[in-house]
Image (cartoon, rainbow, N blue to C red):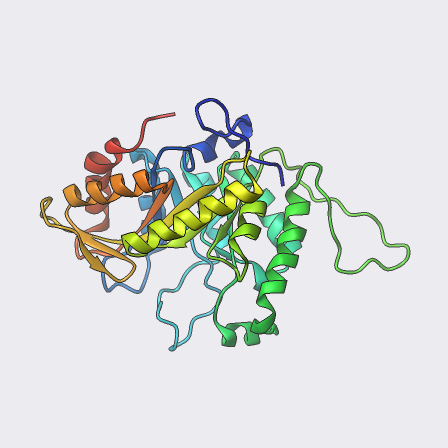
Length: 326
C-alpha cells in the first residue's frame, strides 16, 4: 500500500487522496454519520429513507458516511437492525451522493475472501470517483465464525493474511496473491484498473498490535471511550506511529453514539459509547477531542427527535465550528 505522505499543510500529498483529506487531515477534526440513521428504539430501517438522509448529509457538508458489515443476526446479538449487505449499500450511495466519503466501518476481513473484498473495493472506488475508504475489522463473535466455517481462535492470523492479500491487490502495481498456484495456472489481474487509490483503515484492533496497525494502515478507528482513556489510547497510537512510520500521516478516528437534546444548553452526560448532550456542550467535547489528536468523529445517532431535524441542527450549528471547505 502506498505510503500517505504529508504536504506543508499537513494533508496527503497525492491528489488521488483529496476526498480522503476531507475526512482525515492533520490538526483538524471532521464529522461523519453512521448508517442506518434511526430514531432511538427503532430497529427497522426504511432504506429509501436512508438514501434520502445520505443525500441530505452530502448536501449539508458532512464528511463521511459509515456503513457496517453485519453478516448475520441472532437473538444473542445486541444490534437487532437488519443491515443491508455493505457492498450493495455502498454501490447505491456511490451513485446517490456526490462529495461525501463512503467508508466501511468495517468489512469483516476474516469472514470474506480477500480477493472478493479487493474486487468490491476497487469497484466502489471507481463508482464513487475515489471517495471510498476500506475500513476492515475482524469481528468478535465465535458463533458467527462457526457459521462461516472459520475458527475464531485463528482470527488474528486470518486478519493479517487477508490484509496482505487485499493490500497487494489494491497496491500500485496491483498484484494478485492466489490461495493456491497449481502448475500451469495463469497470472491473474484485478480489473477495473485501480484509477483511484483505495485507502485501507483498521477499525478496531483485529487482534493486532498498534505497531502493526500503524505500519500497515492509513489510520485507526476506535469506539468512543471516556476522555482520559481515549487520550491514553491516542498517546499509545501516536507513539506507535512515530516508531514505525515517522514520515507518514496516520489518522485517528472515533465512532460515537449521540443523543442530541432539543435543549442546546443541556450539559453532556455520558451514555454507553457516547453522550446525551445539547449542541453547545457537544462543540466543547469535539473541540477537546481535536486538541487531543482525534481527526474524525462519526455519530451513531440515537435520539427521539426526527433524524432529519438532528442532521439539520448538526449541519447548521456544529459543522461550521470544525469544517473549513476544501
